[in-house]
Image (cartoon, rainbow, N blue to C red; front, side, top):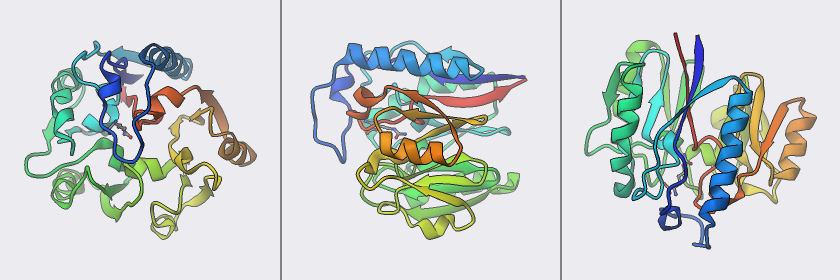
Length: 256
Ligand code: CIR
């Protein structure tokens, strides 16, 4: 059994990325690459074998591989990203996943971004956003319901993706910004709220018993540490200017 982390380095064109809720500010691609290296190093330290796709020079957002697929034990769902500019990212990801999972595909006119799909055991929450619509969600439900997954759609407002607003940080525990998603939808979970001064702090990558977490969100990190979580802090502020977080930069799955 091996744990794979599929990643792709930041593109030279990263500064032309899609932006929805952030003002465009200069992005230092070299700094983003250094931070991405640190992220990959962190994942390797947590037991992942890196499967690094080549850079996609002309696809500014290709580093955010999470949006292109939802990888479960039983199959991988190739998404149809809501931003047209991101759809060509799918080809290389599909080829990388093909040896490891049966593939199914979200078809037009539905849209779905992986950043809107939060999997917690057999519960799957899907954020309805600018990127993910009812039709895409319904297709995901049709793929997953026969496998025993319970798919729930949720409105999200004020941020890009569901996982900008809420992530699992341990079994039965979520980190949440209640301004962007209804905490009532996660009533079955213990909840840690982001610090009010850090609205973008809800994106965290739980890996085993560790949590990969952006170093910049110090106040929320203190809350997570107080909860007893094993934080692995990574520099991520340059990719955050492209509206990406720590879940966005990998697809993590087991292979036999
Ligand atoms: C986009 O707008 O599509 C990219 N600039 C950021 C995507 C971040 N992905 C994610 O949160 N899963």
